[in-house]
Length: 205
Ligand SMILES: [Zn+2]
Image (tube, rainbow, N blue to C red; front, side):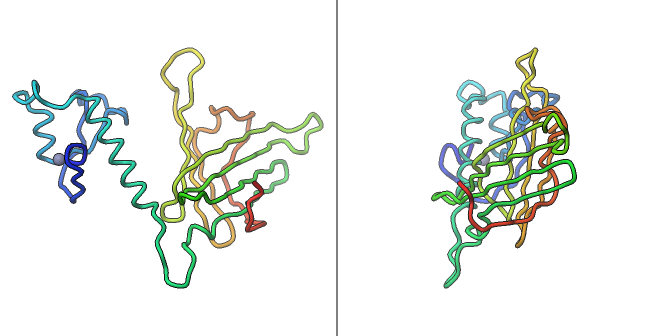
């Protein structure tokens, strides 16, 4: 709220608040960090008539998250050296006896990375492998980038979970940590988790 109303980015003590003021609804979209003063204002009954709405606070929260991400994402300039993010571009490959996966990582002008992934399971099967692919654009923070997407339910509007993929870049490769692949829209048994070697410092596209 401080940020939304006056672009105040000072460090504050605060609490995680429930936007709908229902303490049993801990869905991520219902949670927001509020400083102590703002938390009082938001929860205080006397201020309800002139207080902020749930939607306004949620929008302020999203604007703050964006502002923080773009700060952290700004290229650091080292004298005589390239920004570190430039060094992670390339083509990364994971190979196994019955599976293959690859990531293509390119750096965008705004400092974020674009990642395209392609994975196969069952490469030795006569009827051909199962396939999965994904593509995303995200910032790199502490040598790591994260892709998350809700897993839709076929029957109801509420998502059944989340697919999450984190790529941690090292000097010669990356480690992919994944959850939710079984219910995501990949072919059966297809997974992106594991260790990848960088085979080229150029992205293919
Ligand atoms: Zn505040």
